[in-house]
Image (cartoon, rainbow, N blue to C red):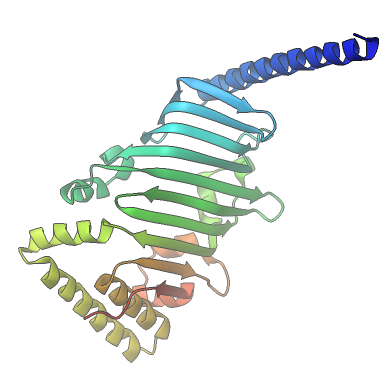
Length: 293
């Protein structure tokens, strides 16, 4: 074997050794940093059985994850992959994570006042594929939620994206709420059994058939659309008619908010007229439902 061949083989072995050493070092450092961050965050608890790092894709994957948030909410996931994370700021300015088989039990801690209604409707847990992806611009103070989605194969899929102005992630304070403004938002819903589950619950409560319950809801929405029309509020009228179509034939629905200028978040807590709010937010509903019966 000539010297060139020996050199190439030796170099190849060296590269493999370096790659293994680097991989071990990166895994060790990531695990150490993650555990340190969790320990320094009051109320945050994270457990996992394994951690892997993809050096080339800059991704960290945790297996068999159980999380308790500072707010008291809990969830588990078969795998949690963090593919983008800002390490330079105490509150990350950008992050992207996906969760496989994300499971969240329907408890008061997780869903508040909605928990009782959800359980009575037969929804004991939410299980699906979750994604969160956001970015914050400190110069414009705009927080953009690119994607927040959950795909439950039983109930349906929901995807939210929005932009909020007036946020300072570098100095979060309660009084900042006064300056928060909604720039835009879009909610996309794909129904599988969620509407049927909710209708079945209300049918039981009202002691009527599901068909009668749907008809009653559609009549109420049609009546609200007529009231909006008399007020010459076409935005609210179209929203009510869109909801009416969806209730008659639940499939998919997109709700969008595109106000002419950012709307202060505090506006939603001032008890304003719902039709006026819809008009201010320039709300639109698009469905692929037919008019139905």
